[in-house]
Image (cartoon, rainbow, N blue to C red; front, side, top):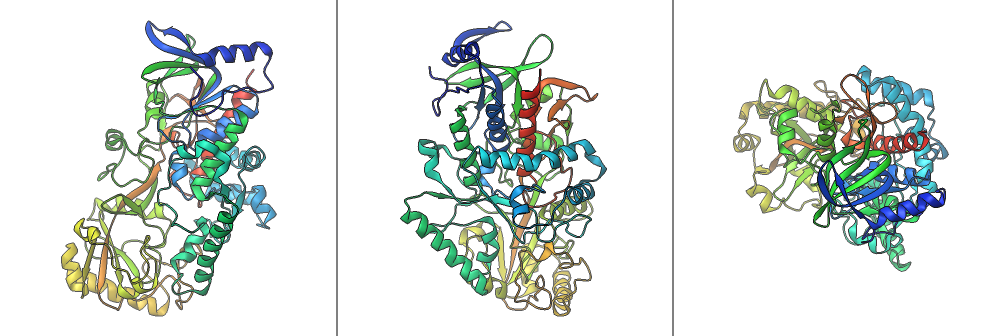
Length: 590
């Protein structure tokens, strides 16, 4: 049986002849027995990586390039996980891409900012490890894969007013990638959360302007540029990939070049330990049987969070919660976290997630990013009153929803807009002036009325309160100052807004009927709690001791961001960095 039905077996030049022969024998898969339980086969590697998202593939690429025989196991029939579905922003201060673009970042600024954002809950050495290794990780990925990156100019850090914050942003995203580099593996790439419209090549930073294309000259120009990019790529015979598709595709191409096999349709069953308690492999389900995959150096778990595991969400997170509001990859059911827990790993941040307001549409939830920030909308609770700065970082908005829900109905909340708003701005993938689909109304995700009072009745909030809320907000829009929640005071608030609106691009009155109310629930990009790790990405027990040979990165580990969110890409940046750190630690081990 070949080692990998999707890629070539690993042969890496730093091995001795004996190592290569042993690896070849392992790749053939021989019958074995573990603890009295017969396994259909046994495979031998130096490192086993669980999960083919950004954390896992970066870890595997680094391990392979450090000379370790490496395999990636993936539960899904596709590779890329939630990273492939994402916009693929990556928050890494002081990386070579932003420094070359003239961003005035420094290690001192980055350290001050991260410390201010995450607070004392995240050990200082973990913060320092992320900041020290992130730039090197980005440089390494560019040297050993076809990935190149672009500065997301203007996409502010989420708290730019804090010490060290960057109003013009630190985040990067993948540049355009030709999918042909993947060959037949392109068919196994996990699809985007929201596919790019046909005939366009779109970057994450384009989204802001595409939303404004009907009312803004730059928006129209960016739309034309997206069409031109696609036309140029087509003439060259390319298959253009951007955002998460480019990130996952580029990392996978790097693994192909390094000879790293990726076993799809191979779920983790459990971790395997030797008599001294060291993680020395995993047991997986493969081709209808159990396979013991031995890892002479250790195991790196990058299997994602538990957003699609209802029992875990019920156990660890606040109500109301479920699995219907997340946009994370459906295979993320906490397999790696549960295996680590069985092995004695301590868990951190299990009550938290990479939250964001979401609209529960009939087909799938929609992560509401620009729509709640554009001028001409307000977010109200079940009492018909505003309760938050609508333009605040998306994770903060949901934290407020949960914090205040116990004292009054905040879940669901309602995004209230008028027809002027609908005439001007893209909403999800609906062009301005187009009606909301009937299916959205039928699902209760949208309501429409010709008066604010009637709209309040339709969504079950007090009419007088909603009318008063709209009147008060309209006054703020006219003066340009939100005296209640300070929308527009932060540079970040203005990113997804309309520069033609004065005096505050975040604020426009609601005045033109009909009016619409869109249901808002606590959505997420994935959970952010998992195994406790140290600055070397080693998994820790509750007493602080290390579980030898076991590492975790990405959403299988407790986030270095703590309960906060430094900027666009605060999920992927640390995930890739701690995968890289874990691989280095294994490679450097005696």
